[in-house]
Image (tube, each protein chain N blue to C red):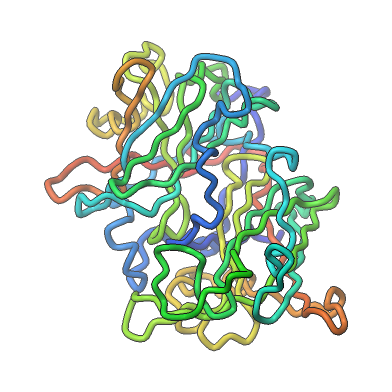
Length: 236
Length: 177
């Protein structure tokens, strides 16, 4: 029985906008995807509430392009955007986690054995918070493309990893931002795993001259939409 | 209406945002009954998943300045994760139901294009009998995949099997949220 006191659930994802667990062209999914059906869980407090991060406990890292006062190699970029929900309401004061490869396409990570140089002035972790109106912004360098072993001569397009929490556990989102005009996108099984073309293309940021700083850095805009809260419970 | 942004895999290099202390949810001085939750993440070949990010969220006790109620832990070379947190109590379900005490757990990893959500309840808690999620799962083996077992004093253990195993080992129940 439903009760008027029940929290408003998050709406189901729109069809085709989310990748499947089982994506044949992405080899690592083969032994990691469930064979059984997921069990639909009506949202209650565990799903409708979520962690809140305070900058006091989780200090921001707003500039990935400088480490210990020394500039990283590569093309300096500014990335900004707005986080809203499906009802176009801004998501204020929420944490945004960022990680990426360096300009050569190498991660500062022991598991990355790609034969490309590490940069002593680049680590590749960022953390920012949205403002009162849902806007975030950070400075970095454009990450390089890199090979991976999914298939013969496989290369990941340039991308930055993002992690969002929103205001409820069921809004959790981990994704990747891509760059406009990258010819590797049409060859990438991870990007192509999203069935809906318009949805996938929303993962491509846009050049934004309004934040591009003359004689300093190109600006890109990457907006994020988190699930909205529906008026009626999800179907069981 | 704009659609929610698409997810993509966390990939194998997410440890750039790893801070091992996040696995200890009591690190800001939370008061309450401390428990540990351990387990391993296993793939469909029965091999440990050694590059996963396991995230834990609990609605009880409620988060505050001293208790984030959220943690993240890497799996190690044996696929094992280890959280220290406070034992949750029951929380409201939909309608007038109560849900048995549980943790929400999400696994993110290379090969998972979006996180897999599951739960850990506590064995021998009588409230499990009336929990709406547990009651809805008829197969006792499958239901059992959501129940952490005691593993010493105030220690609980739950293994997460992403896919039915090579000998037919039961796949963990994952939730569509």
